[in-house]
Length: 383
Image 1 (cartoon, rainbow, N blue to C red):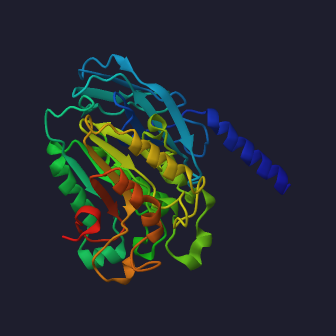
Image 2: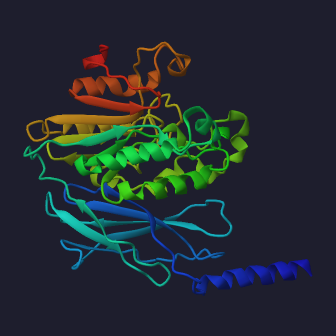
Image 3: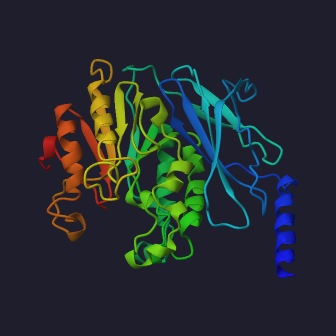
């Protein structure tokens, strides 16, 4: 009898897949990224209908154009993805599309198109990248690492709403900002006790929703950090972490970096150009000898890709080369936090990457992980 009841219940739940949601679902967590020299990726999240696993928007589409009142262009390469967020009531779906053949330095308006179950988004805008190699104006980049939601301990130590206050400061800088570089540790979606009541997917959803005003109008380019490639920072509680939260699975679904356009891998390593600047993002977490978080592929592919990418940079067109990664490998303060595995932080990162950065005269290396601000002069001499 019990087996029959379970079978009937599962059949009823499955039949809901074809039902209509009681209310239209709303696109959320809207974010922009570069997708080649004349392209932009638009990504977003929406929940599925309650108790169903069906994709509420199987043909994700963005309409865009040069006027709010004339969105006459249509996106390409619509993609849907899903992973187990351990929410039995509603499934999170992640979408991305590409806007291609954009005119340089041009304001575009865009809107996520409605589908049967998902409402249309508001109309947003962005300014496309300048001509490759253009030096007609200065480029303004906001860069930082290790930025995420507050927890109870942080509220006690720093006052309430530290994340929200920092977000407000970023919002004020939007008018003079071309794009963002976030050097890993995005939202702190893990099981840290100080994040009590806002962990895992809850932290990601809250954080990315709050950042939509920024990420829907400016390009938000990320690097993978230790909190993205792993979801826990309490070794004895690793069993709380499901496989869908390890090996940067959420990060791979939630962001859409230009790896495809630059020959990189997932959102782990990639590059892009913006005017006279060439930007490279690499992973300090995986895929090099003795990487802190092991390997998603192997120990050589990323390093070989970096060497190849650097060797192809035309310094007469993009004289500035910037590299971002999560972990610093130099620091002047003698503190246990940065003496992991030796005198310097992440000696394996230094061994894998530093000689290439010096060989190809990289101008600037940006990192997070160590929670203070420090600038170091050419090839490691301290200011």
